[in-house]
Length: 361
Ligand SMILES: [Zn+2]
Image (cartoon, rainbow, N blue to C red):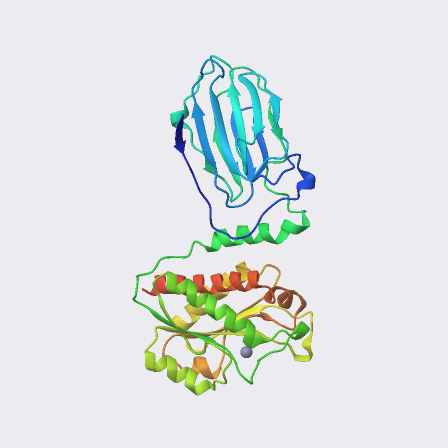
């Protein structure tokens, strides 16, 4: 027996993208959720997220034909055999030992197989595909359960699916020269000044501090040095924020805020980014605004504007103040109270900053 591959792909998210067992025919605590051998000889598997698969092949012997099998963590409840057709003799689901599930595909004699070319590909964090053979004559698909992308109308999965898609895009952050740039991130307000108070009591100071720390982490991973004007709930006046950035001689200054509308109107939502001086400040504002809009579908683009805010007026470097949504707005606040959305916004701000640094060099 040769164990010829062991792939562990797509570990990009900790979200648990599984699977209402009531809609699937495979009922077990097994990591295998669904499988299908298609008419073109491709085997598709659906598993729990981030599982560990092991796949094997064995040439025919006196007892068995050529066999391909995959082992999954988790024990199968009801071992079974499914009759094959065409070049497939049968498919067996079993538990080779406690806590394991094994899916065996047994081929009929005389099927030409080339296992050295086989590659198990992770097409999603919970879906796998491998081309096993080329059907010579008509082959009817065999399978159990639904192997496609989990349908977005499953309530429990809705957010995970959206997040997966978005995160996937936003993990592609642009590269910049390592250890060259210093960015000062300024989480607005703090301490006895909570900033805007939104629907359900959501506080600007909390939202922007968390987002700022996320931005810091993302930029640091990209080799950009980051300093935050505050890291916790402290009172911090505006002049020290400016002095902090000026003394560090930072390359850019990004102040992060969330909005409130007069009269706390729930129908007012949107994102806007301010700069004071033209040229680079404006470019930085544009890059950030472009990215945050992408992760805030439906929320109005209030534009890139010139603003006379103290922190962007008095800092020496290109400086912007970004308003990541209205805590008093129904749409924005519902999003901003969620960690997932804060992450998306942080990715977007980091991406905007990196795009800017990449352009300016
Ligand atoms: Zn503010």
